[in-house]
Length: 504
Ligand SMILES: [Ca+2]
Image (cartoon, rainbow, N blue to C red; front, side, top):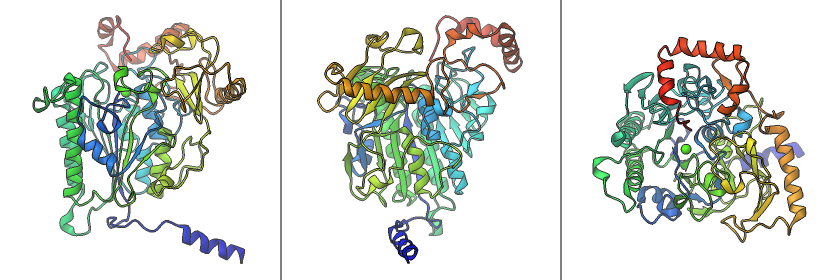
């Protein structure tokens, strides 16, 4: 009897089928990931020098989160976390991948990782990626082998490689930066129009997942002719306004094909901006674990399921995307690995998440665990210079001898150290940090929950910081160099030119 009641209750609690869904009942999902766009870079988050009406409209009709955190303050690890649902340290991709770097050219997101795109494929979706990949450039790490049916874009930072691809074909040896938003917008809108077929009356043949990872406002950037001088914030502002325009064109294509209602659009960024003025009111920038590096806009827009627009201050993070998307397409989470996030679906209807507000969030910078969040508390952990990644820009905390404790309740700018006043909280958070290091590692220390980094050369050393490459055995270095020469016969000449300035 109890079983029967439980069954009836379960049936009653099962969410109603999605209305206005296309034939298969599955929603489309578009994940817009901008690059180096900070907390106050768009109008609805406080921008004053640029106008972003299209992004603002998504927020005004959807959910706008004010306490969203990326899993890293630089590109590659942040992207790995979005796509795998795991901390970068867990999925093995915690370094900033640069194909020009001796220690990194052969690394990437492990092909054994299950990406978001692969989840969608399991449920019969069409998958497409437009934009920047930055999870390895060797063929072993291609996005086309990680669940995406098609690809169009600039896979790396311009400084790493200026090439533009359509699938595996290079269409520009040097991407015309002033046309980048146009190129992306054309492909995104063509893709949407090609999917939707309202003339059949039954909508699309297949639902789609589109990962739109625009390279802007990461540098270098140029605005298209129509946007030059359009903003009050120079070229960067013009580029922001053009990016916003492109999102407006994308929404238009969804509306024209009749699928806007049942398409979940996610808008966010991979990390904070390079200048603090775009991260305000938060302290810090990209490259650091102060809030400016991790706290960015996060907007969900889905008219058929998110009926009541709201601003939500519940702390959420990048690892929540994977379980959220999996739940809405009814794809079970793979049972053979740990997921670090939680589905945000309850928030759509104003319900609470399972995790408590004081469950910890860990701020790693490459292999160095630098801060822990617990409710309103944030503890910056002691650290030594040698633990820091080379891109670290937080000079104030570069050689931190004692923990520094902030409380967001009274201090969003991380400026008043309360560590001396709250030794018990400090102790509790140091204990959490110790546990995290045991599982997710620390500089020169493996954690028991870390999965292997993807490598195109099996058995090659995984070195996150180029400076430590010199510790690698000479014979191993030679073998790897030989493989590189085989793959890139001209590499020696190029290396000379590049050796002056290491790039992120
Ligand atoms: Ca970035």
